[in-house]
Length: 247
Length: 374
Image (cartoon, rainbow over all chains, first blue to last red; front, top):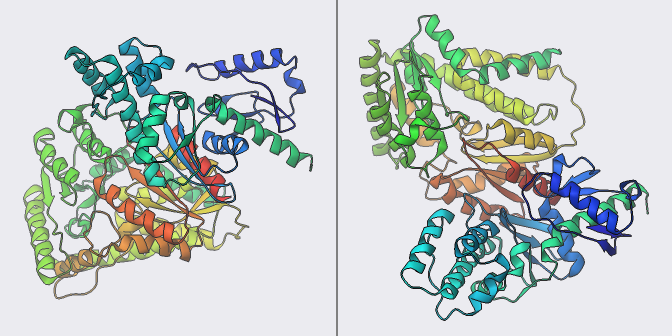
């Protein structure tokens, strides 16, 4: 994410891959090229996410939780609860009345309730991850996926399909399963409106709607939900420059 | 190297070399009995002229113990068994394992089947430990331990000797409490240093450890106090000795000013007081112990204790170091969380495991907590 004067997004790219900091380096090259800029013209590079400490071009690094909070509040300052479901983990962030992050919880013990769970399920169903929502909408009676363990849930899905359950019902069951785990986490932090969903899973309407049903609150999201962490990092970089230059 | 650094280095060396420490005692022809956590009556072992050698397992890959334990169980227990199976305790005369949680009970039973050369001695504690019948039950448990120790080592127990050992342990308790207080004034002592001081106590005869700690205290008294710009935190949990975890605290400029960690200060909170016999004195000590997830307390005093620690040491927040799959801690987390919320004390929950090789999620959580505390 390339941010100008703390306000204008002049470039952004997304690469979904677990290849350490190589991906981030490649993405930065692409963004700079598209914006017709060089790294030397960038005042401050802030890295976030897993691997942030090893990204050499970065001037500093900030945890993705702080970045998601900054990014979402930039979009909507009235948000008080952020649900961030990413590929590796799920987090619920609580923002206070002053717009400051005051509490958070992260998933523990296993990958249930994360984007990885959906990836595994999409893989065995041979359906592209971005089409899960469409299939979930066809569900007449969502199947129950009760296993917490991703691998056991995978077996459960295979058994459900083998016993004649429709793909739509199974996918709706999968979305409900993710929503149910994340709702548990959210309730531990406490839900306060307005609620915003960030991270890649926000694009999955099946999970979003299931979460709304579980938490009984409307959940906002954006086409750029997956970029909220990067946006927050860019805002934080701008704040650092302002601080250094006493602006 | 400064005198202070030299003294700290001694603790690090002992804490990181339990196997060498055990070998040292065995080469001195001393009998050694392994003491698994928690609240193992080390004083009894000490009184019989045996070295009580503590163990809280180790950060190792668990292989053989998986034959005996299910996957989702406390890794402290799993790693104690792994060390036993792979021979790290060879030469020890016995192991005492208390029964204060379900995982500990499994450890004892599994030990019998998997480590045949080191006899298992159970210490069965009562849940209702404060009433007279509870103290009598504890005392009966100690008598069983004594009988088993006599059988395993050929040595005999003498109540008068126990009086002397209790004095040594009470002095060690007092010195460790004094040290914890003192360290809060010295931000240059890192979380890793602090942990090494506490951890080294498991592997040394207590009067030896007392002497080392007294030496450190004397050095600290001669050290000029510097401005404290660190973020003061209180830790609570079962165990918080993982090197990567401590490094994360240090990297984030955090200072542990007090703790209620079972493997650290929690065990030193109560001294044994005079009673009719020394064994009664020891049972009385256990009856008075509290602020621990494995000790039944209907009032859940641990919550208020945590809040009080924060106030006393002016800490900015609490870090709850949850040992993965520790049921008693999971229950107590809820009441501690509630007590902290009522006092507006920020609380961070992090989950650790003896088998963890990647602490990035913990680092992310601690860094974010630091942002909140700012």
